[in-house]
Image (cartoon, rainbow, N blue to C red; front, side, top):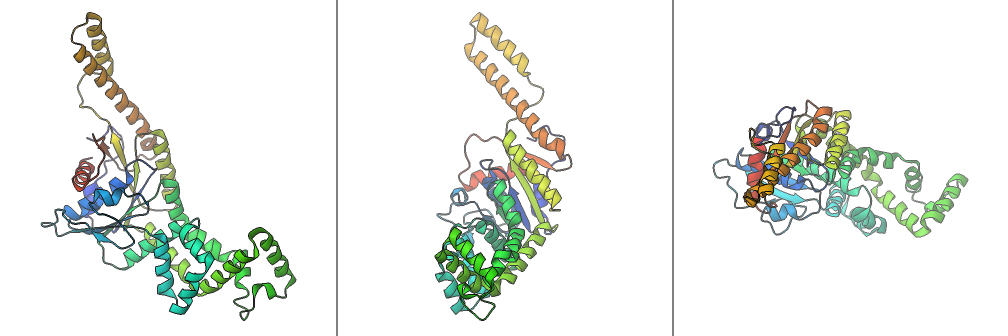
Amino acid sequence: MVADLSAPRLDVDGLLADPAIRIVVCCGAGGVGKTTTAAALGLRAAETHGRRTVVLTIDPARRLAQSMGLTELDNTPRQVKGIDVERSGGELHAMMLDMKRTFDEVVEQHTSPKRAAEIFANPFYQAMSSTFAGTQEYMAMEKLGQLRAGEEWDLIVVDTPPSRSALDFLDAPARLSRFLDGRMLRLLLAPARSGGRSMFSLVTASFGLFSRAVQKILGAQLLTDLSGFVAALDSMFGGFRQRADQTYQILQDPQTAFLLVAAPERDAIREAAYFAERLVAERMPLSGLVLNRMHTTEPGGLTAEASEAAAERLADTGDNPVTADVLRIHAALLRQAEREAAVAAEFTGSFPSVPTGSVAAQPADVHDVDGLRTIGALLALS
């Protein structure tokens, strides 16, 4: 049932069926059902609308694989079997970003085997490709760009990490450009561009001072590793920036739809509003808000006040204690629904034109395809 919100209705089926929509990006705080929402959207796109769909999760949680009946997910799309696509002709695949494997693939695709081997052996590359801050988000951009460029998929559904990390996902191209254009990087590249001399043998006093200062902070070995890494990747830097910028442009294009996912809790709604402001500022297509785990009641029943009063009267007489308990539960549910509607209104009041849908709270966690199918149907009815 749709929550009593003033925002326009989110037409999920219209969005999933539209052949002009090629990417759906699900964003939101942690623990609000974002991965489940992304999987349910992908399943409905395949089963109901006949689209060849891949769900890409950047969140390393295992929930997506488990709910789709897969033993594991990796950097290669895996087809989800046993779903109802006989009539629609669609397909559903799922994958989980492996940032190191994606980085390795980029290196292999854009440099020679000899140079790739040098890069893979570099200690700084080994650390950066696995743990360096920002690498995951940038490689997510690379993987999304690869999936979109291949023209293999009718629809790509992206399940992002919790929203502040998803903002890093949007910031990856700009951060990479700042890194590539930074003064320190240009100094580190100078030896490779000056005939291959060692960075420590440069004759310029200014760089000598810089080198000694950085050595004190980072250590000579790390600086040597970094210099070798930068020199090895020098020929690839322009391609990194170009591909990241192209993917960023795709995210701004009408072919992409951003869906904010939130629970009716103040922190989650605040995160959704924060992300909505950023999307608007970046001119990215915000298509709607999904409110998960909403509590609703049928209109026209007893009010919370009437239920509480009736429960008190029964308690005073000692008659029908079970009925009194039921009335109290009903009153508590009404109060909770009112609180959730008020919290949701904080978002819809600030963004009245953003279409909104809701999914009622479920009695159990979603852990299989049937559960995903139910969530997809509820999203379509919202």
